[in-house]
Length: 424
Image (cartoon, rainbow, N blue to C red):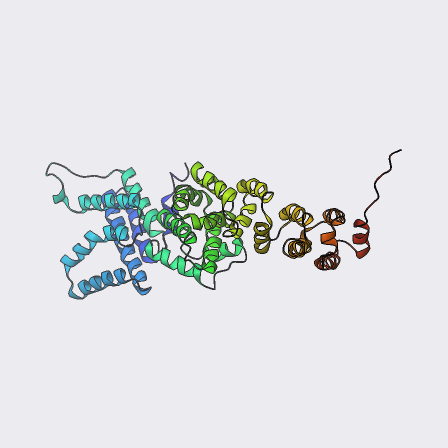
């Protein structure tokens, strides 16, 4: 209710440009005096002035469309070409929406209505002879508010140019990637500070699409992911709404061989599984269950970090063979892999197998063992002569001692084979 009844003086404080603020102040003053037609005319003048001021800013940033438009305007000013002024005023609103994407379609319609009412107020010949057009106070107030909220309070770059600027900033080495809070601090001074809905929507769509593009450099992929997390922190409700609309569509469009990028996205942008439709969710679970580990070891490893895929991935770990598990261990050793690695190591049936499995499966995981797991493994291999006589076992023992999990004496004790109990 407070938002619906916002005070006009508060609106005035939102105007970013001093000259535009002066036009809106005059519109508000005439509104308060009951001169509603004059207020609408002044509001439209404020809109036109603000638009051309924004285009000058875009031209200074190198936008070719804005430069061409400003050249037309300056030429008309030099010639005092009234007809050209009218032509530019007539098309500038449409250009703002279509060419510069600085207005959403609904915002465009609101300002188009302001333009129409301005003509009805300023040109009596636009009305029938017997009609005397008098806008209501409510309509006038709405026009003033729309002009400020949709346009005059907004920064210059809020369309295609803003998106290009935003992506350039994010891809730069200056963009902080240590944590989300730093990224938020960086982005709040740019177009994402108070973005229009269309800019935020296009940013989300572009970020998701580029992340899932296998040709994108991984460094840039990570930067854009950090930026998306920052945008979620800044504008959570809207960003999540756009993710819900776009994420499933984008992931369905990926090729099978790029499914790993879908899993990577879900890992780097947490709590986004909820935005996937049931079909995409099923497809990713199936991928984790059936994907060739030799081809996608990193994707399989990343699935452990996703709550909704973790159980499926852990279940499959118990079915991995030696070569598959070695690939997964190579790209991402973790505690989850210990049980299967120990089981395969204990099953070594040759001296060579013991060496290979010990080197590829156990050694990379040593730091993830706890003491109980380590003691259990040494007890389990004590009766396998292929392991106990392998040269690789000494390396494994040394690593456990180096990281402080077990002492040498504790390892010896664990490997002592206890005699069977004698039944009385």
